[in-house]
Amino acid sequence: MGGFGSGRHGGKSTTGDMWALDIRRIARAGRLTPGQSFNWQWSRNGEPVANINLRTDTDRVTLDYRARDRGGEWQAMNYPVRLSWTPCTYGGQRAWWLCPAAGCGRRVAVLYGGKIYACRHCHQLAYRTQREQAHDRAGSKADKLRDRLGWEAGILNGNGAKPKGMHWSTFDRLESEHDALVNQTFAGIMAKFGPLRELIGR
Image (cartoon, rainbow, N blue to C red):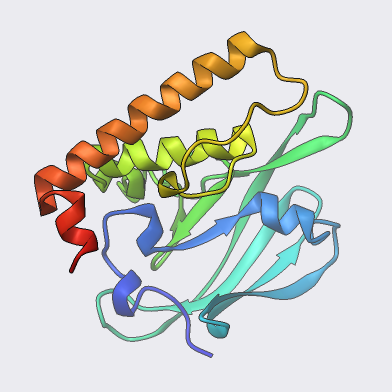
C-alpha cells in the first residue's frame, strides 16, 4: 500500500492534517519490546489508507516506508529514531521519541509524517484547535468539563447533577465555568449564523 507525503496530508499546516506516529499508542500495543518488526497503519472510515514498517531495538525504532514530496517521485525512506525513557510516578518507564530532524532532538510523544517524521516544531505545525474560532474552543472546553462532571456529552443536553464524592465548592466552580463557556459558544454561533431558534427552524 502507498506511503506518505501525498494527497490531502501533504504540505498542510495543522497536526490533524498529517500522519501522527504516537509513541504512547505503540507502547500500549506492546510493540516497544526490542527485536520486533511490524506494520503500523492508519485507517479512515474503517479502511486502511497508509502504513509504515517499524523495527524496534533497545534504544531506537527504525522507520521504513515510501514517501514523495509535493507529488514527486516515490522514494524509499529508512532511518532510525532514537528513544528516551523517563520514570513514571508509580513505577515503570515512559518512552519518548527524540526528533530525528537535523539540529532538533526534542523529546516528544508524537512525530508527524510527510516525507520525513519530525516533531510539530520542525514541521511548523499548529494544533488544530489553534485554527478554531473562539466559540469553537469554548464549546470544546465545555465538553471537557462535562466529561469531568460525568454529564452527557453535548452542551445542548443541559446540566447534570453533582458527581458523587465531589465537594460542593468544586462542583459550583466547575458548573459556573461550564455555563460561561456555553454562553460564549452560543454567542459566537449566533453572531455567525443568527439566532438559534432560526437555525433550529430551518
